[in-house]
Length: 418
Image (cartoon, rainbow, N blue to C red):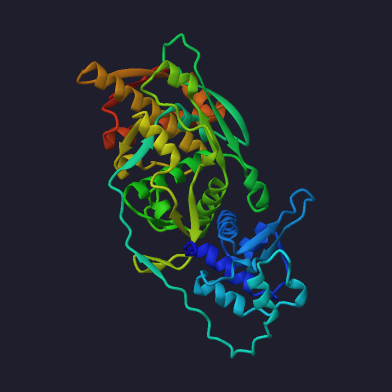
């Protein structure tokens, strides 16, 4: 029976285990293994699982005693059906007699008893890892989810379960979608101190989604930065890259579930989404990737065909799109500015939908300042005074790029025409 093909991470982990004295158990935490191989804990989890399922190793869990796991190279796989790489693994071992066990097959024990320590080999030159070279594609459009889960998820939510009202505007129904956020994996990373989903994280997420929609399998922090719609068009600073890397690393470790059972029962066109936990940002950090001829220090590889929040919105037909110019921000990329932009994008998207349904040439709606302030965290007099000018600047940008037709300022609010 042929052995299953190992992933790159599993092969690297197996080679790492081979560096330890033959026959001795290896005790290490997942974080220690991730550090040793310069990869993510998720990659280690998958590699360990594959090696165990394939019979290469066995594991003694230390979880109950709050200790690290212990790993044993499993020599029971030796047989005439083994792949050459497994036999090479065994032939290079020189285990002590105590490693021969009644738990092994007779054939494996016979081979182990006949082992003699291998002769010292000359030092080998360092292995040159193959470079993956790809060409980047710049997105023509930015796809932007406008459903209520996407609207609320990045408003500083933490680990926990949240109820989100999803009934249609003006409806007397009280429909709730239950969203659970699991930050357990983040507890293993002491570097990530800000454990909440922020408006900045959403910009990163949408930018990564746009790059994936443009058929990019590998993306860099610089590519993400350029699709976030920042005011500066140049390459990111070291601080910009650091913020993006931290945001990506945080979202990679977050799992969530979406239970929209009530909504699906009320509105059959909204199919019930999967309720089990899934990763918010299913990517892995990879090395030795050259994008447009440049090797990047931080590169992500997509593990799914589509990011899950985009799938959720697409199945509901609640995605709008912008050109890169329309997606840009006319001011700096702070959480406060992003929240303000998010609010107006969601409101104007709804207005454009209502316009399409009414089949009118234009459609206008009023937004009260008090509602804007409440939704955007503008909670004092100084912020409100400054907000008026920022709103004006934002709407002028929307008008110049074609998101809206016009707007009029009133005493208590703003009337927008789309």
